[in-house]
Length: 446
Image (cartoon, rainbow, N blue to C red; front, side):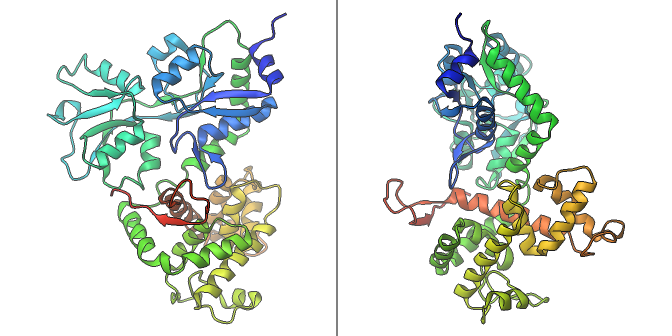
């Protein structure tokens, strides 16, 4: 008997998935591949007990044709489910909804609708759902014109709008949100669609074995809440920074970081941390000012309290190197105290919250989270409980009492936003440089 597709995958020990290289799908993180599509596909491969191989074809058309020809088991590429695509493919259950948005440059007039684009150049990715949408809308808007390009991604077209090379593009709302901190002069004019589902795309054939497993997989992670948590990890912090805050952050990083960069790298390496995370923390704490102090008595680049400094053996909190070393060591200590069954990145977010509000208040918040029927091991749930520590009906039954619980939530989400910007802005000086610790700030078009 001929083995099914699922049986062949398990015999070969490999799941082959087509994807796209973008913040919303798949990219190389500081330590390993990441992105929502990668995380979902990796979890699915683990459920099947096989390794995951992600392949990035050159164009969207190559993805569609390759899946249809059986060159990959399916595509996990942030693909919108459309009527045209359903004629060629079948889709797993949707995992997210987006809207398609017209994007323009902030220095240009905001168009009122698609009939108001004038002579402006609108470009979209060939074969995309955006192109399908425009073809449909042209039946109503006769003078609607655009150019389709096959060798660029949606993110590339947003860059062209930011560079004022083209006037408009269409992008999915999730991609716009993730790229907003990096293309500061981009604006959304309006949605051109109702909410649209995103889903994995499979070829149509008589063998349903792998498709049926994917259906079961999504049913499972929707029911146990894992899908919601994964989406929160990917998008939960993207609206934290506004336009002005992002510009100021980049300016301060360029001006202030060089004096301390070697210290951040030194102690991050010593304590097994990403140095860019320490920089993000320091910016949130002190705006990278070595002489910073607050009315409550915390001081220095990492804003250590008197007690914490005494416990760490630090004599001068205003000394930059002592402050950075102390902050790195203290965060590491807190990270080790977080229960080991809490997975990353939730464990790091809770350690950061503990740095801000104190370890035992986070313990109280986790207890409240459990009482509320939520998961005390997930940041997405704990962060909704932390603000309750300021409400008497909740804190009166806790061991450590009242706390300004909204502050650590804002603290962690700001750090996540700064960290995201640093991970994308700071790259090796030379991609093939043998020394991976050499970095520089790469200017981006604002």
